[in-house]
Image 1 (tube, rainbow, N blue to C red):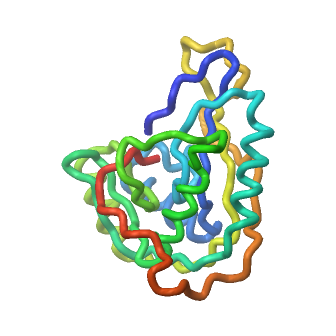
Image 2 (image 1 turned 180 degrees about the vertical axis):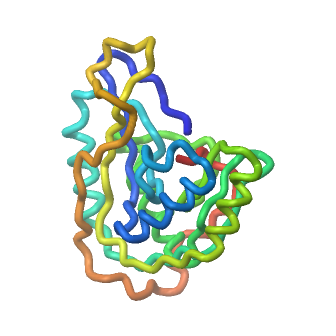
Length: 217
């Protein structure tokens, strides 16, 4: 996981879809079995905005933006049951989306709207997933793939979450984002404002993004 080094007036945030608690526990168990040290550090999630350094003074604007994004979003269904990997380019095993990927793509594009406070480019095309193991030995990645093959997760996405990173690089001891240990905290949750999305008119969905390695957390 790549965490940017914030300046003294910045902190690191991320935006994601949190997994329901019972599914999150299953993901943590797989990460632990794979020997992933981030099993208890990173809450299981689907990333919408990767770790990003922002000015602390801009957090209110960020929250207003996310509130507006959520208000214009309808709940949608997600099904996770496809194990994949970014090997050999990146040592990651993940659980992919059988359904809900296009809705996630549209949502992350709105989060990163070029006119908003979270405008930024991505290193790779967006590929929604839940990480099962990251930067562990090959046998650990194989363990994650094997155990992940038995997972199926179905749930309705009704909100997005703003996370703030706890911890700071040693050379940025003046950061205002102090914490006793590394991890992520939910700063706020933003409920969707539309009705349940049971389907979209033909031709209205975003094109499928090709699979490509991404920075995974």
